[in-house]
Length: 120
Length: 213
Picture 1: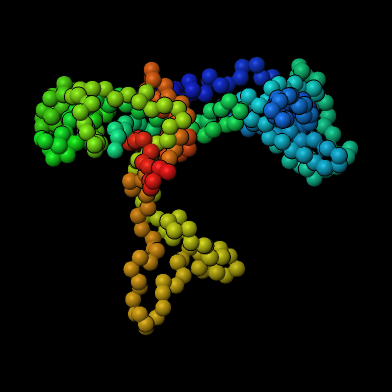
Picture 2: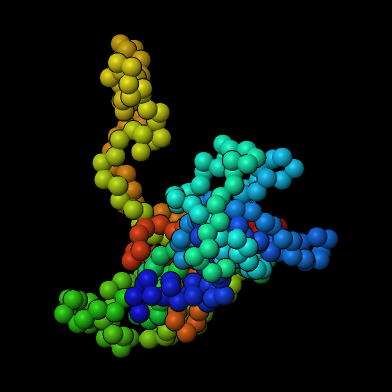
């Protein structure tokens, strides 16, 4: 076996197959596994996907939301066991791959138009 | 003073541990190695085990090399490496050394040749600061002063200058084995190891430095 095939076979054991199709601009709800006093529970985190990185097992999404007036961005490693589930709530219309311009906007200006041609 | 294993670096990836943390790992095709010679204190003056790794065609080796390997009935091997031991009694000629000699969680030292960077300048080789690139500056990547003037009238030995970088034998100590795949002879070692994919590496159990207590 070639080196790349061996590495891919190691990665394929850990790749999730049930991930939804996510696009930049979508509003998603991510269930994050957190540990609290020896107990595990799933905490939801909701926001807009402003960036994606496709890297096989290293695939990530950056989710932005405004929490108590403060912008919060979290990067999720999609294939990590810490990400319990992902649900797409709304498909947004974005004309670029990275929506970093949303960081400079507040209030109504951060809205994205909804698109209906992609199924949820 | 224990036997290690020779292998080929395959590349890097990441695996998730029980806590869900991503661990960067280097995948190494380790072995199988064949014991090609057993040296004993009586016969050779010291005890050691010589192992071979990397199968090649017969025509790639010279007749003396093939003759040496014939004694252990090993197939033609590219690389031979000797490991010194306190006593080499446990090893026989032709014995196979496989990746499953290591266990997950064990610490190892990895020896290899670093990536050669050729004749490298001050910034790349010694992390010197760069001069201003604009505002009329002509001092971009120069070294600055190399010492005082008339006294001593020479540059002191050891002054860091441009020159060959990399391509040297490097030991990375105390890396953890994350996973062992005995069927495919694969080792997953946490962290980076010297060289590019395809490079020959020597993996030995970590050397105990100082007193264990």
